[in-house]
Amino acid sequence: MGKTDCVVMCTTLPAGADAAALARTLVGERLAACVATRPGARSVYRWRDAIEEDEEQQVLIKTTADRVESLGKRIRELHPYEVPEILVLPVIGGDGDYLEWVRACTADGAP
Image 1 (cartoon, one colour):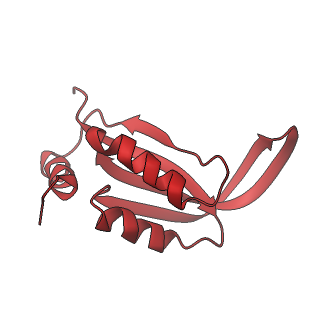
Image 2 (cartoon, helix red, strand yellow; image 1 turned 135 degrees about the vertical axis):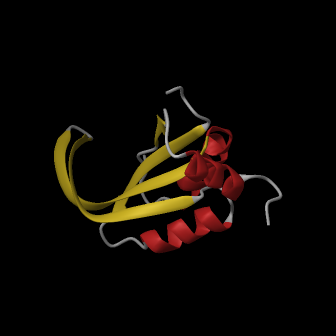
Protein backbone atom coordinates (compact mmCIF):
# COMPACT_ATOMS: atom_id res chain seq x y z
CA MET A 1 0.00 0.00 0.00
CA GLY A 2 1.25 3.45 -0.84
CA LYS A 3 0.75 6.61 1.16
CA THR A 4 -2.50 8.47 0.45
CA ASP A 5 -3.28 12.20 0.59
CA CYS A 6 -5.39 11.59 3.71
CA VAL A 7 -4.04 12.14 7.21
CA VAL A 8 -5.15 11.85 10.81
CA MET A 9 -4.41 14.83 13.02
CA CYS A 10 -4.30 14.16 16.75
CA THR A 11 -4.81 16.54 19.63
CA THR A 12 -6.00 16.37 23.21
CA LEU A 13 -8.36 18.58 25.20
CA PRO A 14 -8.89 18.98 28.93
CA ALA A 15 -11.41 16.54 30.40
CA GLY A 16 -14.06 19.25 30.83
CA ALA A 17 -13.64 20.93 27.44
CA ASP A 18 -16.46 20.87 24.90
CA ALA A 19 -14.91 18.47 22.38
CA ALA A 20 -18.19 18.23 20.46
CA ALA A 21 -18.14 21.98 19.81
CA LEU A 22 -14.59 21.74 18.47
CA ALA A 23 -15.61 18.81 16.27
CA ARG A 24 -18.65 20.65 14.89
CA THR A 25 -16.54 23.71 14.11
CA LEU A 26 -13.82 21.78 12.28
CA VAL A 27 -16.32 19.71 10.27
CA GLY A 28 -18.51 22.75 9.61
CA GLU A 29 -15.54 24.68 8.23
CA ARG A 30 -14.59 21.70 6.01
CA LEU A 31 -11.22 21.40 7.72
CA ALA A 32 -12.14 17.85 8.76
CA ALA A 33 -14.36 15.12 7.37
CA CYS A 34 -14.80 13.48 10.77
CA VAL A 35 -13.67 14.15 14.33
CA ALA A 36 -13.73 11.34 16.87
CA THR A 37 -13.41 12.18 20.55
CA ARG A 38 -12.45 9.77 23.29
CA PRO A 39 -12.89 10.88 26.89
CA GLY A 40 -10.99 9.28 29.74
CA ALA A 41 -7.42 9.55 28.43
CA ARG A 42 -4.79 9.85 31.13
CA SER A 43 -1.75 11.87 30.13
CA VAL A 44 1.56 12.00 31.95
CA TYR A 45 3.92 14.64 30.62
CA ARG A 46 6.71 17.03 31.51
CA TRP A 47 5.76 20.72 31.62
CA ARG A 48 8.00 23.49 32.95
CA ASP A 49 10.35 21.05 34.68
CA ALA A 50 7.59 19.21 36.52
CA ILE A 51 5.94 15.90 35.77
CA GLU A 52 2.21 16.48 35.36
CA GLU A 53 -0.69 14.04 35.15
CA ASP A 54 -4.16 14.95 33.87
CA GLU A 55 -7.39 13.50 32.57
CA GLU A 56 -7.87 14.53 28.96
CA GLN A 57 -9.92 13.77 25.88
CA GLN A 58 -8.17 12.35 22.85
CA VAL A 59 -9.29 13.89 19.57
CA LEU A 60 -8.70 12.19 16.19
CA ILE A 61 -9.34 14.33 13.12
CA LYS A 62 -9.63 12.81 9.64
CA THR A 63 -8.65 15.20 6.87
CA THR A 64 -6.40 15.63 3.84
CA ALA A 65 -2.79 16.78 3.64
CA ASP A 66 -3.77 20.01 1.91
CA ARG A 67 -5.89 20.97 4.96
CA VAL A 68 -3.15 20.39 7.56
CA GLU A 69 -1.81 23.95 7.71
CA SER A 70 -5.26 25.58 7.98
CA LEU A 71 -6.46 22.94 10.42
CA GLY A 72 -3.41 23.35 12.64
CA LYS A 73 -3.88 27.13 12.67
CA ARG A 74 -7.56 26.75 13.58
CA ILE A 75 -6.79 24.30 16.38
CA ARG A 76 -4.27 26.74 17.84
CA GLU A 77 -6.93 29.50 17.71
CA LEU A 78 -9.57 27.39 19.48
CA HIS A 79 -7.41 25.34 21.85
CA PRO A 80 -7.22 26.19 25.56
CA TYR A 81 -3.63 24.94 25.98
CA GLU A 82 -0.62 27.19 25.60
CA VAL A 83 1.06 24.49 23.51
CA PRO A 84 -1.58 22.13 22.10
CA GLU A 85 -0.69 18.69 20.85
CA ILE A 86 -0.88 18.75 17.06
CA LEU A 87 0.43 15.59 15.45
CA VAL A 88 -0.13 14.63 11.82
CA LEU A 89 -0.08 10.92 10.99
CA PRO A 90 0.02 9.80 7.36
CA VAL A 91 -2.63 7.36 6.19
CA ILE A 92 -0.82 4.69 4.20
CA GLY A 93 -3.97 2.97 3.02
CA GLY A 94 -7.62 2.38 3.71
CA ASP A 95 -10.97 1.72 2.14
CA GLY A 96 -11.13 3.60 -1.15
CA ASP A 97 -14.71 4.74 -0.64
CA TYR A 98 -13.91 6.09 2.83
CA LEU A 99 -10.81 7.94 1.62
CA GLU A 100 -12.80 9.46 -1.24
CA TRP A 101 -15.45 10.56 1.27
CA VAL A 102 -12.74 12.30 3.36
CA ARG A 103 -11.53 14.10 0.23
CA ALA A 104 -15.05 15.14 -0.77
CA CYS A 105 -15.94 16.44 2.70
CA THR A 106 -12.84 18.63 2.90
CA ALA A 107 -12.81 19.92 -0.68
CA ASP A 108 -13.04 23.63 -1.38
CA GLY A 109 -16.45 24.59 -2.68
CA ALA A 110 -18.11 21.30 -1.76
CA PRO A 111 -21.82 21.56 -0.89
